[in-house]
Image 1 (cartoon, rainbow, N blue to C red):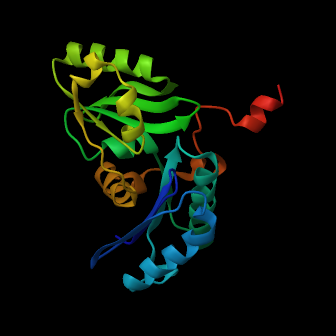
Image 2: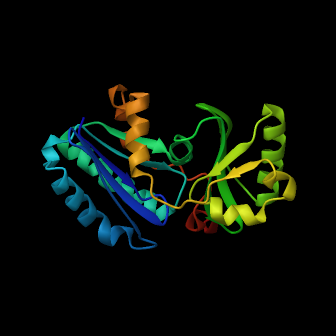
Length: 224
């Protein structure tokens, strides 16, 4: 299955192309430069995979939450390619994707700025706490309570793990397995879509929607 995956949700921009020859992957610390470099990165990986755009069976991107601008860039490119090529388009919830490589009890987090984080908690493939935004004090309470209820240590992962960890309570830290790796998740996007068989679902409706932001943008708040 020939897939293109685009992860622009956070500062690490990553691209993955899956073909019969394997997965071709690259990432870079893009910060605010996603729009400047993403197309060149896609082009390079497609050439490495020896694929023309017409050979793609689907296009995948992060569905949010994450960077407002980054998500819009990824969505625009992925939907544009899918529509022009008449292939399926799938947007995967960002926190689900970040948690998907782990078993057991998992907390995935993304920094939301303003001293808060987007987070969600999973037990295997079951979502225990839906995606929400909260300060570290609430997340600490959720870690302690959930780890005690499930009688299991919780893996902390995601692009916001490193910034959240120092702000957590001592009680929460004692319940955690801390993964401080920082990387892009385009490979995980491909693995998630294949495992969930998402390309065979009817995804036509999401072509008319945008990313999941959870928090309103500053522009939206200023209109009130």
